[in-house]
Each structure stands twice: as C-alpha cells, then as structure tokens.
Length: 159
Image (cartoon, rainbow, N blue to C red):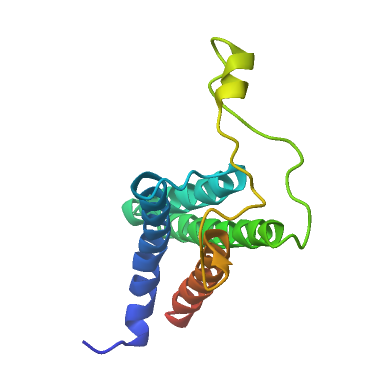
C-alpha cells in the first residue's frame, strides 16, 4: 500500500491515538511489570498523555469537522506537552536544574502522619531506569516531541 498525500490526515489521526496509548501502556508495563514506581513528574507526563488520548478518541467520534479539528489539535498539543514535561524531568534527573523541592504523597485520610512515614519516597531527580544513559523521561521527551511534529506535519500535508 503506497502512502499518498490524501492518506496523510488519516495517518495523523491514527497516530494521535496510538502515540499516547503506547506511551501510557509503556509506563504501566514499567510500573506494574518491572516495579518502576512513578514519581510526581512521571505522573505529570502521564496526565498529558491521558488528555491527548481522550481528545484524540473524541476527535474520532465527533462528526462536526471544526470540532474534530479542534480536538485533534488538542491531542497533538497534549502529546507535545508530555514531551516538554519529559524534557524538564530529564533535566532534573541530569541535575541541569532543580526540580520539585517538596515531596508529594497520597492516602492521607486515616492517619496522615503514618501514611507519610510509610509512603515510599520516589525521587524525581533519580531516574528509575536508563538505557544508554537516557531515562524514561528522556525517551518520552524525544518520542513525544518527534511524534507531535510528525502528526502535525502529516495533518498539514493533507490540506
């Protein structure tokens, strides 16, 4: 099957769904399959991908062309935002700049002090995993920004 300019917008829409879905699947496999607990900034990257996935799926289900286009571009923006957050997070991990100065925790309902003391501390400035010196946040930055650029290029090519 040959790639034609007419197929570019369709490919962009498919990628707008697959990229955040793949990124979230990778994060969940790392978390639950390999016990790599996410830090606060990891969650920020996930939130952006969650939003992008919701916008991309909504764009596929809406019939109004203007609404579809708006939702699609919000999905692209969400993918790019996750990449930017990943870049910031990678910079914190490499100690290029300071990240969060406070810790975040959850489940404080019953005994807040006991919950804080029992909670594992997941530091944002220490990568949980690296490959060739690049952390998951670094790979998210590279992949998400490249994907957002590709998706935007494909969407514009079909015009």
